[in-house]
Image 1: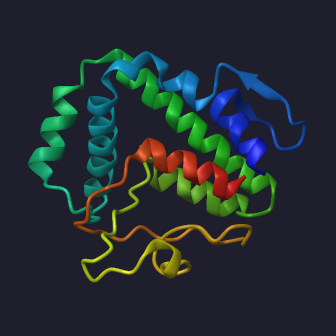
Image 2: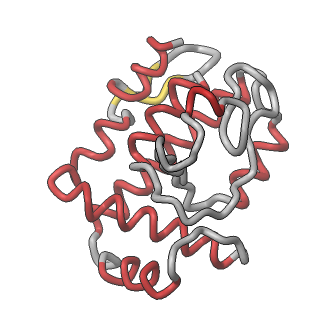
Length: 178
């Protein structure tokens, strides 16, 4: 429900069974320490994710040298690592919520966790008027989630389109999954 997604975003991680909220674990709480440097932080988490995917031999549409430079540039920023650890825990809590709700099997979730240790969503920007289909018209096509459908998490496919702000996409994912 929208209310539960709002709780994850503004108040903290929610346990599916008990509905208890862990205060201090909201997405807002997690990114607050890096809020004055959000653009750098976004670049760094995207680069961290791309580095993981490149290590698995997967395409991202991002250039290795740019990815490595960005990871190195912010490697000594402890607040970035702390915030990223929090984001990974927050995303994992949403995945576990989906498991507990019966949308994803525990086995699938475990496989996702293994393959996506530095998970950041790579949703791509589609430009209307450039011969691309509007997002409302493309529902069910390509990578993404189909609300309420078990097994609807799709495989990542490499692309050279611009990546939508991953923090914005995490919020959207919370509304879709919960």
